[in-house]
Length: 244
Image (cartoon, rainbow, N blue to C red; front, side):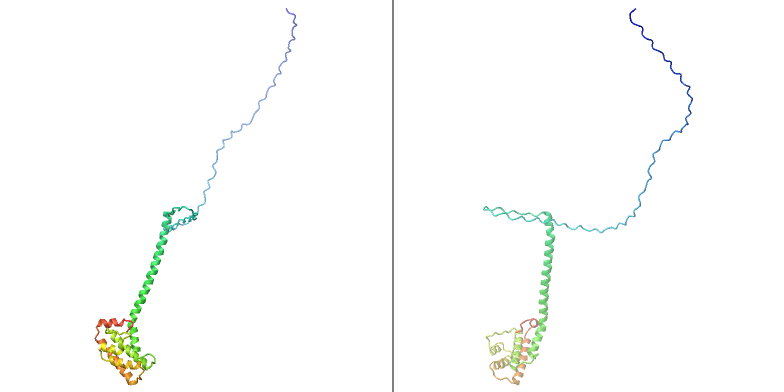
């Protein structure tokens, strides 16, 4: 045996006696049904009345004009002659310039045509009024529209003789004397008119008998000269100006 002392025994503690438990009654709770997801109410959008569509006419788009390129500033002068830079127009700018040039050309042609038509119409009116102008002039040579002197009346009758001779194809010049011209044409009445005209130019007094004889001789010479002309020559004489 050893010298060790015996250990103290551990006291045994009796376990408490449990009290009798009374049964507890809990109320039965029905199980909670699962929450079903509820869809949100469907809200239909308000109906918008559509405006009636009107068919638009086919409108051709307006031609777009391309901007013209800005001209470059001139290059500074140099000693060596630089080659000229040729500016080429783009196809869009050339197409835009064609309608403008064609419009200006057509406008110019219209103005030119109107100008030519006006000139032709004016010449035609003058041509048509020549017979009327001739008739008025011959009426004044025979019977003046206003009072004239005796010398002027003699000159008027001589002009009537020259008109008839011109219709027949006879012409005189400023250097030819009236009597020489009367001898050259050889028509009755011209020599008597030339003699009275010479007396008037030299200042010899002319009385009423001379004036009456001058008018009779001038009418006879005018009709005699025109009697030898053709119809074509008479028609041409109606539109000729000046008369003598």
